[in-house]
Length: 176
Image 1 (tube, one colour):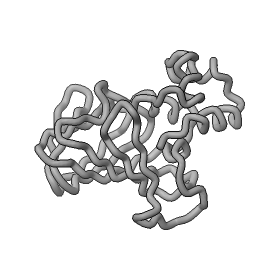
Image 2 (tube, helix red, strand yellow):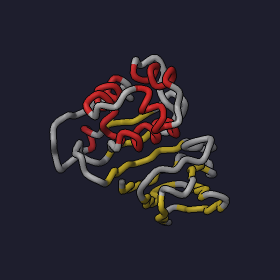
Image 3 (cartoon, rainbow, N blue to C red):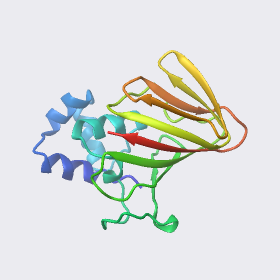
Image 4 (cartoon, rainbow, N blue to C red):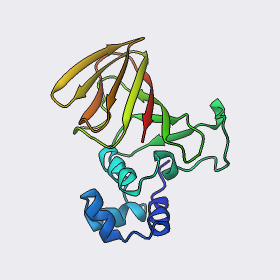
């Protein structure tokens, strides 16, 4: 589960004030304070803004195995779930400060990763393992089916939607 206290820890380690983080993210000080105190969980879009502003990979905000490994066993994966969404992110990357995040994303039928388009620095590549998805890249809608893949600069505003009647499973690599 998401650990908002990690936001405060990392922010303080980087000597960033709450006001500075608010300016970098475009979020209010009040919302950031509530996230840090675990009163609210961020939306996916808010979460990405915080990660980008702090220049930290997503897995640093989730509780799980803290040891440094190069292998992540199936039963040791960290699970990322945010309260505003039924989308589940299985973190496949080891807990390291690398530039690549590797995720298994599970989206229920009719669900979407974010209601608004999100963008952040880097590049994303995805592979559809099961089901079908609509990827919205700025104004373009791209339909992907089992076995299809896609790569795009993540600075392009984007979001994912499961357009099928079954759970969509996809593997994503995100380079920061």
